Image (tube, rainbow, N blue to C red; front, side, top):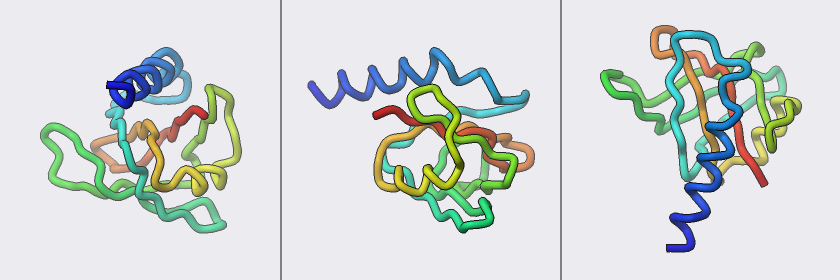
Length: 105
């Protein structure tokens, strides 16, 4: 029960501020365990994303991808430290490009 409450709190924080940088069309995906691979040139992938009607589970991180910690924009490389933890990933289902990665601590 406590885990459910914590997850709902995290999701509500994300949903209250996630429309800042996303461009239409985008799909928000809440992940309990962020499976991210990110290189120093700020490109990479996120595995195990789900999307209704999508036939893929991997999305691409580009240098245009933004990262937000507690609603404040941070360097994208900080998202590496969020691996294995909850995060909200918003991506374009047509291009499979990640627009934002959001998390709170």
